[in-house]
Length: 210
Image (cartoon, rainbow, N blue to C red; front, top):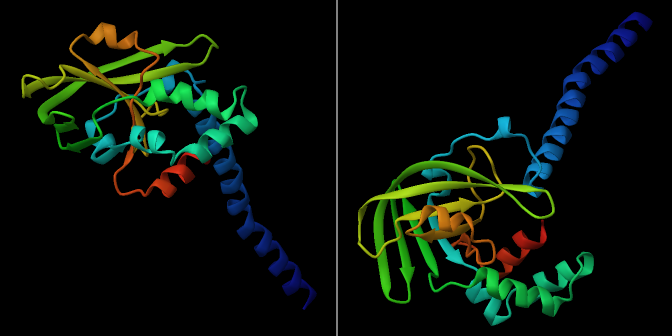
């Protein structure tokens, strides 16, 4: 009886060991992901990404900012940041500003829905660029070049979504224009997009989670 009891205890410990190891692994993975999100990573961690990482129907958050729907986000940032909520709002007024309120990505086709109607074109992957910022952290922009489509559609666009390897985006910042090199110099205006299916309240929840 004692032997059976001891065996059961040992069996329980052995069964728990993989779960314990998995938990430690998960925590390590989460810590790595958080560091990458903040812009601290090795070049060897970067990998090419397909356009399908950003596939879907996306809404600009700029209208949410101007309507006051993101006031809670600004207040949340002010609680731990170095600016007032009003200062954060002014900062994001510049950062989020765009007249392209919706972007739809299907396969290699991207449709920009702007003030003058939709513009559509096909794009192919054109590599990535690493940027180093003033405070020492870095970012990766994944670049796509137009192959055919509306003449007024941008010749290039660059995704930045805090990821550096293949993985589905949950939001992104987008830079677009006809001069690939000039886009890399743009650091003040970064139109930002979240899934169109999210309500304003759900966007707020997503933003305050980071």
